Image (tube, rainbow over all chains, first blue to last red; front, side):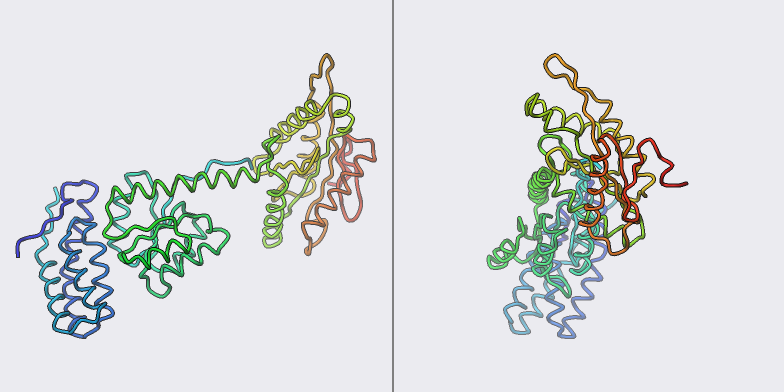
Length: 103
Length: 319
């Protein structure tokens, strides 16, 4: 997967919080994987919902898109393999995010 | 206290995600807005009551109490009812939007939000809020004199009396009535009467203290509420107010007309712990009538069921 960069990297109001957000993503990946393994689908849906809402706001539109797919799959009671697939895709997306360099 | 300019604009964010808090702060701070936040519904409501924000950005999916319920409660609570609520949520279905707006929210923005749009919507909500505040304040002002009106004074009297009782502080009410106002009105006309009332009001406002609440109570009657003030201090203030009226002269046609006012003072301490607003008003009114009976242009106080003249005899209250 290609590296994903925030579209707000050049915005001085945003740089610091974009960095914070990007640095916290590995922890979110771990959480997504743990929730999937535990089949804690309600919590998984909450986390997907939050990532959908925040991702685009930080300039990471792909996070919003993929998280929305996971949320939708969980909401509609999709079969487990589909949920697993969506979760893995979201984790992969989060891992592709590049932490911007701060001056 | 005179009508005041509203506080600098403050936005309360109620959202369970820290990422959203940070994002809203980064996006709204350049607008010169103060952003405060809470992470769950219950605390959000408490914060709204305590800090009186100008706009609330409210998420729907919150732990414990959801955003719809928070909105319903905020719209029910008298002190938060007028604060505009904008739903800021990842839930984008029409049903939720309609439900949120029907609960009294002014707007609905979906996440991820466009920063330019969010700012514009917050600005729009603030504009409406400001007009609403002005309207509300206008409804508590007396049109002729610019003082607070009776309905404001009645509200304040009730709430200040609660404060006074709770903290054991004295609260004093002064009633003032322009002497022979009917005669002035009848001989020199209502327009002149209006000018007199405006002049007296100006004097009361100028000579009252900053913390005093000066109101036009009716026709030619004024009321001044003195918080945290005992009878003796209130007598000093009342004497000053009486002299402010006495010292004023009005020009009517070719003559100079002097007007005086009579005063009645009653303090919560002199009446007892179960004091009601009506009792305090009645006591001050009795004192005012005593001033009228004593020849006008003087101050009487109500103390232990007695009515005492204090003008020219400040020692009557003892040392």
